[in-house]
Length: 197
Image (cartoon, rainbow, N blue to C red; front, side, top):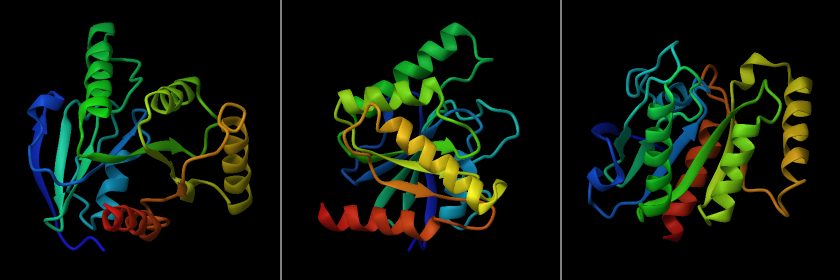
């Protein structure tokens, strides 16, 4: 269980991240996928990560210390259409450098909005993670926005699309920051990884 969560630092590049040796679990997704809301739900603190109606709010690598034992890392969203080409390129480089160079990062949670079908940008990003051996799990967000049947259909359709490219799928979680769905499973998964380190 997450008992304490404390904001530590925001870094413009992986080389500026804290050097503590503690394991890190990073959260990433397209702009406006509900990343900050999910982090706040997991940490039982509505004001921890800054949420915004406007996409593209997170532009730095944000570290939160959890239970004094591990870090939750809020990464910038990718594919924010209204950012200029230069800013998009800088964010892409920052994200890639963190994913490839950050030894403390033990799992990347890729957030996907359960209401949408598989998007090219997400599929390409996950393919890139696979090619580079970056360990990740898939987290569907905003589950409260769909009825149970529709939710199941959407998730199955997404998994089937992924299986066209992947032999096996990474762990998949279904969450809602509105009603807390999936929060316990996610924190349990993090605990299991931490125990195995």
